[in-house]
Length: 171
Length: 171
Figure 1 (tube, helix red, strand yellow):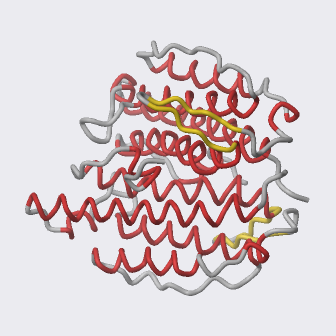
Figure 2 (cartoon, rainbow over the protein chains, first blue to last red; figure 1 turned 120 degrees about the horizontal axis):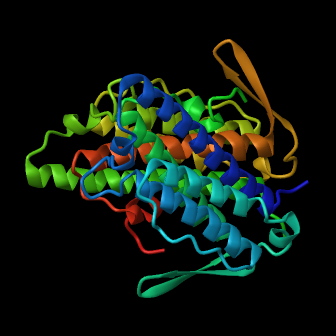
């Protein structure tokens, strides 16, 4: 039996966003126990010219919902980048997961060679659906999830790779 | 046409390791231009209890070659974690890529539901080949590539996401 485009995409986006939500819960507990203002985490960045946690969450959300919509051949729901607080970032994760969960297997599977267009400033990248997923979307999505994890880790939140991979649960 | 396990795994590992090699070349040029000792990068870490660049490269290599071997049903070549220098880290990347390039499509494709075992300290995780790839291997592999990128970025190496996604080349 071969693989399906749906199996390779939507459940993984949902799982990693849920894991990030679980990481947020651990960060919240750590902040409460140590008198850290959560806004410190919201505004943290790994390098002065890298996006803060706000940007990483927004970009992870955009990567997941944009890819899901492209793979399903529908329009990605607009989620304006207005978040500035911890609570708003958590809500953005939940909204993104809720959208991903509306995507049905039959919307995604069945034509893995169809064209997917990705408009960038000044040009448009054109991929097959499968190349879009493996060459662009999955690495791009993981980039922002890992960077969000690393930001919080660098802020002293006690996290391990099992939090990233499995939301702190065993496999 | 559906997806193949090979297409979803081996070319992506190779591409991202090549991108990391290209990132190393940029880091080298930046260090030379700014009088930075490359050992600073080798020993850099994002948090005191996270692995340094040495560990991130070794773990990315292990993730890629271990997954490729498991998916192909062969033994992963031993690469002892002896690297301590920049040149040795670059060589580890090249050795890993060279092994991945020996894996043939027909070794990987054709039985996506077969059992893959992943021995961890104290227990063994059991997956289908497809679940191993999507739930464990790809997120785990990207974790170490992104962390290596982030480490160098936090050290001031001028990098952008196109370096991570495409080795600094256009798509």
